[in-house]
Image 1 (cartoon, rainbow, N blue to C red):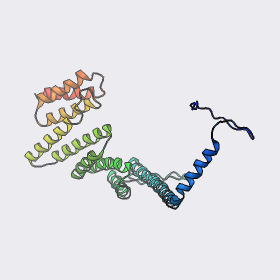
Image 2: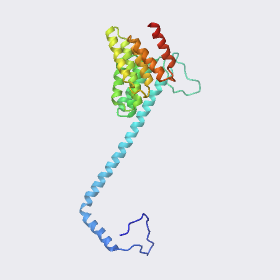
Image 3: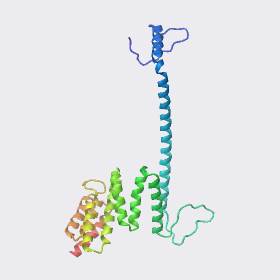
Image 4: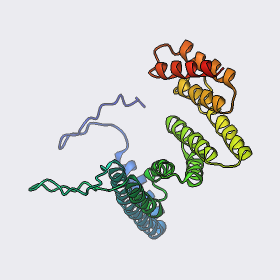
Length: 266
């Protein structure tokens, strides 16, 4: 039998365009129908079930999309709060214009409001991707509010789930800063040193790739911690590494100044 080359030939009315036992084809179809007749009821039930499944999937997808939109909207509201201006005087909006921008008298008041928004988002849309992103924002707010233990826990939770390499770097930097801030607030010298050492280890994991994204900042944090811990030689070596390997870095002036201060102390 010649192979079909991809062209479809229509049959005009009253014209036969193909050869072969057409009656046999009809007969085979009829036989197939008769053979399947006992199964029609089962097939109908199965088709109905499939229709229900498809309908359920459509409903599920629709509901999921609604939840995704709601979660995104809630996340946007939380970010709007975080970006809101601080207005100690509580100045009213410009006359004649509708101003829906939230206003807060203190950074603390704004932070607490943002945390409330994020908490609602995480409770109502825990599985949404933006809920994970909101957790990173939440950790930052907790840090800014001086709630370092909570910030550390939030950063660690985020790092357990995050799949974005760059956002993981942001989270690990935040974790290191939170551990450092907590250590500096310690009154006990040993606890302070232990905390700073932990922060240093966190920054050493920030970007171990010599040519990786954010490498100079990772070295900068390590140098800072070494200097704080009294290792001036180690700190100076890292600062020099930044200047030598990243000559056009935006932090060159800051690094140079820190090296000068270390030399004065030495």
